[in-house]
Image (cartoon, rainbow, N blue to C red; front, side, top):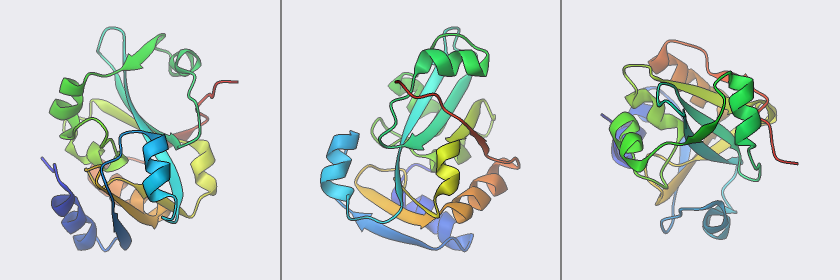
Length: 168
């Protein structure tokens, strides 16, 4: 299981994914990230690790950092009703990361493919994206297309883009 920055950066490098690394103090919220990461190029995102009520379906949702996701509408759109945030224990067990470090890169740890990765359709307009490299003490900026190719190479399936409903 890939669980730290050095391991994921080595994988990105071996897959010829160019990135720029920015070290900063640990950030746990969008507000903290904006204080330390505003200078980093690329679309800044937040990542939500969600589950259905019965804990039989899981999603890793990536949206622009300023989007307030309507979980009720999203659950209806996905056909699973009420969604909630997964526990930190599930986050660590299934994705190998700690709270505050959620990143689409962690999906490569889901060997059982229990988790559905979905990007907000708004991100299709972005050339570069800024994400954590498995730790919240750093951010990498890379081409969105490079990230998608990397993820799809490990998942052997296309990353899904959909309109994630926001709160009005």
